[in-house]
Amino acid sequence: MSGGVARVMTTRWDDVPVVKADSAGATEFPESGWGALLCWIAGPEDVVRVARVAGEVGVTRVEMVDGDSSVTWERPTTVEERDAIEDSVDEYLVQAALPPRPRGYRWFARPGAPDVATWSRALQNAVDSGGRPSDPRQVRELGERVGVELREE
Image 1 (cartoon, rainbow, N blue to C red):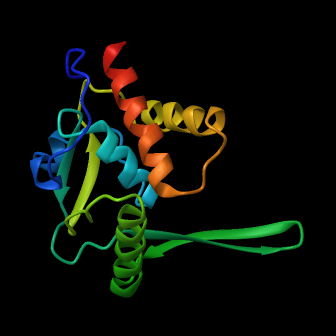
Image 2 (image 1 turned 90 degrees about the vertical axis):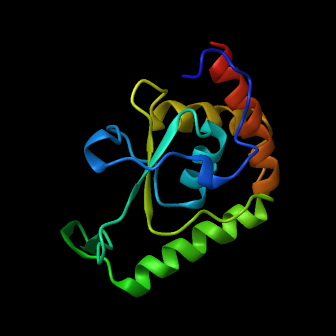
């Protein structure tokens, strides 16, 4: 945590430090609009990013359900799927009145900072008690208050 400093990321995504994968931390933010919003709320004091290795696109978990049985397997995410994920994240951020994230990175809670589950739980509690807004801009506003509260603890 950043020593009680009541601040959210109001600067730029580029202010988030780029680190090597082995020093990134244990908890990665989800690759979703929600995960990107959590990164923004946590801010550059509590977030680091790792450049994706050239050609690294991730893993997609596939589950086929047939009645009471299911089969699950993993396969490499395609470049098209990676682009669709990034497009979806950017779309959510723009709806929340935030700039798109730089592409080509994985985003982590900084070691020693609140972990991703803590940020997510705090934002979900704020959303639940705030009338469950669906507008990403309203969710962002709740999240900014969450960021201040988590830093004051």
